[in-house]
Length: 297
Image (cartoon, helix red, strand yellow):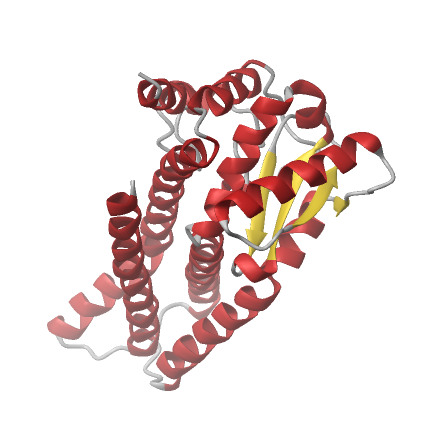
């Protein structure tokens, strides 16, 4: 388990380096196509600014987008949820995250924040009504594992970079339609390079999105295993996932930008599971349950 976490962090550094190189390469392609070197500098500065902004404000944005509100300690069921989170945080050696409630009947939960000192956990009303205490402990242990493994920070940065690349590619396509092409030299080598730049700009958002999905799926498996290690009861999380999978339905405020944060796909897309999650932010629940049950053997 600990070797896997260490390897996972190394992959994180590698993948972040790929993303930064992709942003710089995209800026270079823009600057060459439009014959303006300032575009490259703008791309680098803008990507750094977006990383800074997402680092400090990602949790507020994610909670607001999901319609989450602070848990009310005067409510017995919400107070019990707060106590479960506190006990798990103490057992895992983490500061207690802030607890939020999403008034939605779709069973789901997510964690957000830049680190363990600034983390929040949000749980839907549907999940609170569906799960037993042992199952809820398993689900929340999964979310706290995302906090401890720094998955929430990585996911936020990845989403930001994907958004920058996607918006840049979209802007290029739209601008080029009205511009009618850039001022390029007439020699063949420059023409070929310009074509390659256009192809790269158009395809880069697709590659960025695929990398984002791959990261999210790997993190879910690791958080499942880490959560089971925390509770010493893999069957609890496995049972919770079985209930979530059987009762999955779209959340009212499901959002593609925050979908990867949730313990299960907030769109409740069974088709995504049938195609092995190739274009889903989550691996198939059946695979996650199988891995958890193998841990208890």
